[in-house]
Image (tube, rainbow, N blue to C red; front, side):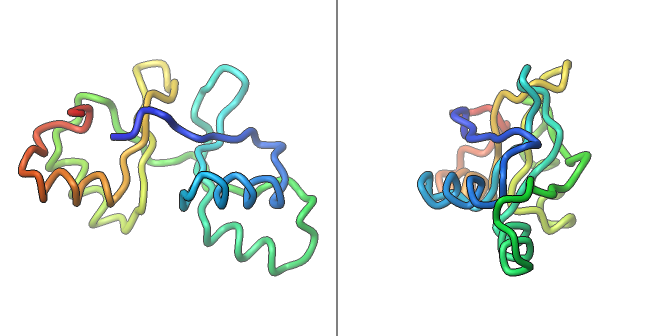
Length: 123
């Protein structure tokens, strides 16, 4: 799990979202409101489709509501959800839908490699 989540607001433009993803070397952004309530996910694919369609100054169109998991979700359940749903990342939210982290395919692969994948929140 990554605790330092890069997120954007629903009014973020395609151009700014692309800049954020490139600058942080990430493949997706969590879209959140001003209280860090998780609203959706914006991916590289979304950026490429919207960017190639024209105006980069339009607000992002993102997947909503996103699939998400809780910090206590068992590792195997997260793994199955990502594999079966073909997700590249899932927001990790608390009981109030506030963003506390993100789990990616790379996080899962690292946990499997390290043989330490017991829970999503395991450092």
